Image (cartoon, rainbow, N blue to C red; front, side, top):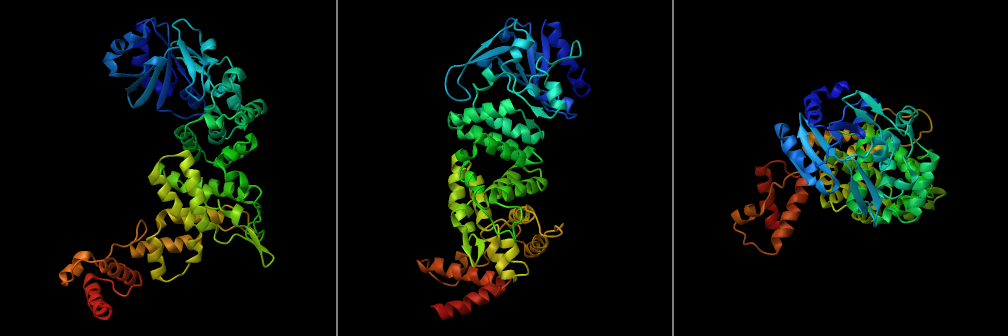
Length: 459
């Protein structure tokens, strides 16, 4: 028995008692061979004639979820593991997209035949816990040791357009080399419109895995470029042909800089998926307007207003790949203000307070750090991001790391002073908040005193 899954031995023995041969397949076997533990376990069940009997067979272990029943897939939770139970099956292309398949399950299908439907050889390795043997008909173990990503069968591989993006994130996550035949297959699929077949939520899920699980997302992004996939993700396809000033960017064009910055950002991940994904997309898009703003100015390359103009370009990009409104609205301010951290180094507190009303400073600092360190340097490369460290300290002191300060003067304060709500309330409250950001007062009492003086002058 694979040692790390010994806790599943009673389940395995129970299935065997009912004449079922369970075969561990897919990621859990691959991860075991890589020395990792997977909490997602895929098990193919051989020798079962009637899958409808599974809920009763597994009753002692909990409830089985039959949402994948039409595909011969049953979900099951046990001992902290999320287990997918499936019958051996074949898949034949019947329509567009990653769901356009006719699925046929078999009780007597052999493992070799069943494994042909899988995408990569490293995902087509099986393990029989009863005989404690590996089943590796496509030499996936050799490919894993050689750090090579190779498809199981070119004919079945091209039937699923999602596999293009799976190749991208697998190469990056496991730092593999893409087999030349696989690269050619993916390029041909993209040329025939494979990416256009995919719903945005599936595209987003693969990018999410790339950005949250790969130590070097640049490997996957570079493979996507080699496949010819960047035009689908415009304006990324314009980065490579956008030069930068060699004094500040010795590494070269915007594409090279962006890949380097993505890898830095990956090294700064917090473990909070939502926050990390926001920061990764912000880094991917922080220079998205440079292709349309780069000019030669006084003999030097410059991209004036690229941060401002990048907001709308970033919005269009994100709307194409996700409906997650909250994510988009958190990424866009980071694009807009990604250069502010270095510009505000040693700036007065009022400017920091103002920045905090537009963007989450706690997210902005690592995005700016990735931008700053994600490049080559003429001379010794810095080991610290001093501007970011200073801003973090100041924003912490001011209490505005995650959001701007709460207004000290509210509408009820105006009413308490005898004012009747009218169209001027908004103007007065705005001016009061501006004064607060300018640190003209610090406490509620000081704010009320300031307001009384202001109202005498204004009214």
